[in-house]
Image 1 (tube, rainbow, N blue to C red):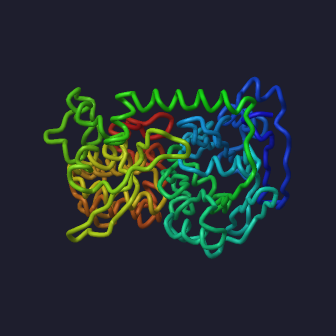
Image 2 (image 1 turned 120 degrees about the horizontal axis):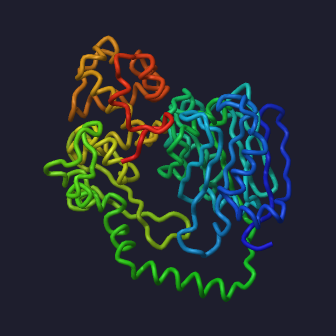
Image 3 (image 1 turned 180 degrees about the horizontal axis):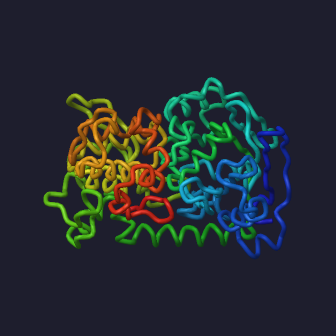
Length: 433
């Protein structure tokens, strides 16, 4: 078998049973791998319509791609598949980083998590040794703290995938993180993990991945890398990240502002990838496993009252959802909101979407200070945006509990035609920019 390791690892958190199965040959031919086989597994286990996102019979499937872990460029992605909590339907979210390659090196193409634990746990995989371990010392910790503890316990070469407080609190805007700042952000997969009391999956692998013709494979992989290096689009992604195109998008009047009320913003430069570079916020460019482009970045604030704040990104969508959307045309303001979402385990797109709806609802008089935890909400207010994010992650007060279930449910609770300015969602999932 080439590319694939040929194994599906199953872990049942309810029965504590752990087993493996071989990937059928016809599955690999029909579905190739990753999201294809993930979808097949979800169908086989969860086609009963009574299996909702919070049903113990729901599964979560994690899988890197068919060539992840090899020298194929830009192949370091991992798909996460489950019955999602935002739509109640099939959810496929995706993350970069290095976790997927490590799962392949441990000998597995897919990890299927079944059941529901009665206490917080995490899964540790080290080649053939797979354990369900007590997570009482991880539960309640944020993403940064969780990653640090897992590396202390299992070594710096281990790779972690985890949820933050938002996932623990079953917030539908919660995201699954790995390698710190990489996230399977959409659809609330972290809430499914939180319902299962699964805090993290730590992996360390040492097994090789075979390819049929190593010499030819290496030659083709190098040709692909050279094509990527020469491509102007890839060069722009490396230089400015995914947010490098925002000024151009704004010129097209396609950059949503103030909860999709506008498409163009004057002086949009502070919330672009170019502003990260020019302002000295960009500290280094980072690549996912095996990637030539390196579009990811680490940014930090070095001076002023916010000195010391550091995080991954912000990316294109984050500058939109936490910048232009709530009227924050301020580089450091978006950096602060992005860092808080990353630390608490929130999808920046959905977090920004529900925050924008709350601000507009308050401005229209539909929400009052009694509903907003006493906050005087408005466009361009950085401290208030940060407090919305914190309330959301912890379901803090009336505001956090209202927003924690997403806009589809929030608008039904509030009524007063509030769905009319929550239109940018599909089946309950807030729209990306």
